[in-house]
Image (cartoon, rainbow, N blue to C red):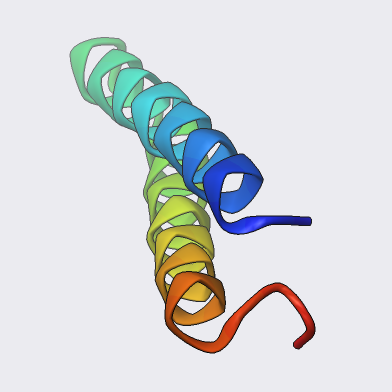
Length: 60
């Protein structure tokens, strides 16, 4: 995957995670809230991977 693909997927994961986290809070559902937090963290990691690929090239 290229830098832009990673960053696009990261944005999607961060957004979906934020929605799940918020819905989990509103509905008092700790499992959904935890899932949202994990998905946001995954998105943040993908964003870092995209940044690294941008700096080093897509060959990594």
